[in-house]
Image (tube, rainbow, N blue to C red; front, side):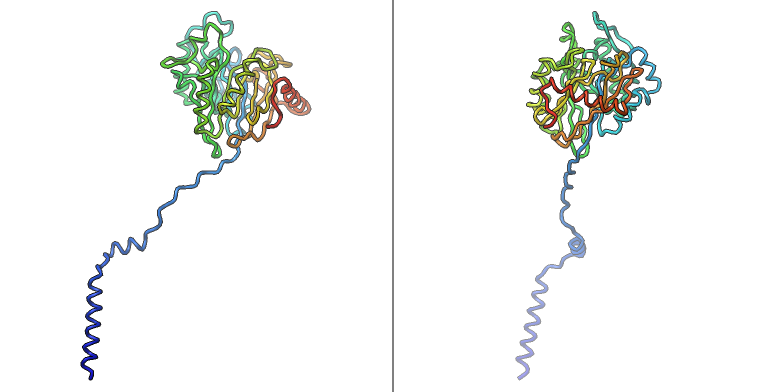
Length: 358
């Protein structure tokens, strides 16, 4: 009676053993790897953009008695440096050739040059980038240009609007600030007629980025727009001692904005011009003198720092820090005079067609 039952149990056990043998053994190394494996790592999240500030000063050179200020680069720009350093980015127009040699441009009444320590002084004052696209950037012609480019390379100080060819001259300065990809292009709308051809950068030809070649400048703006959050165009433009923008400025500004510029700012007139919104973009038609040897307290000596707060393409705020040029350098104003100077600066907007709000 029990034999068939025992036989049945033995058959079951044999079948189980056969099944176990049919399953391949997993090597110990594979079992450990499976136990310790983790999911594929995910790409880090893109940093969220936060507002940043950029400060603009006007025209800078180190001619005449200002040359001595380069003996101490840390204090060369005077007390205004504290305002520049507070911003996330700061920029000025460097209105001089960087050379100690060369021959002055023939026929020019005023020619400016400075040693390479001028770039060191700007950096020490908190300036992050300068434009040399102006009517003094090649005052010492080809030799001065070669020396300027060599000094820029040696000091590693970012300068826009000048280069060994047009590609380099129109190339933007780029920096990511608080998650914002910022691109700054420099160009000049002001050149002495006899030097337009000689000074304008081209394919295989060194020189300055010219705003007179509007298609070339607009192309540079459109290219920058493709991979930037904020596009800024710094221009040398305007008419000396005229407080309202000239027809060339009024024509160019909207074209640059249409091409993708978020900020258009510049100077040349030696005096302040109005600033404000052109649609959603921000335009400043004239920053005036900044570090300059010649100034009249009531006109050319009026200066300041324009600080914009920006997030992507949005200009959130503009702030004017008024100053007066004393001993060739800007000194921030205080008290009731400061308040009045801010009101005077805002009043300059009346002949610009710009708005106080976007």
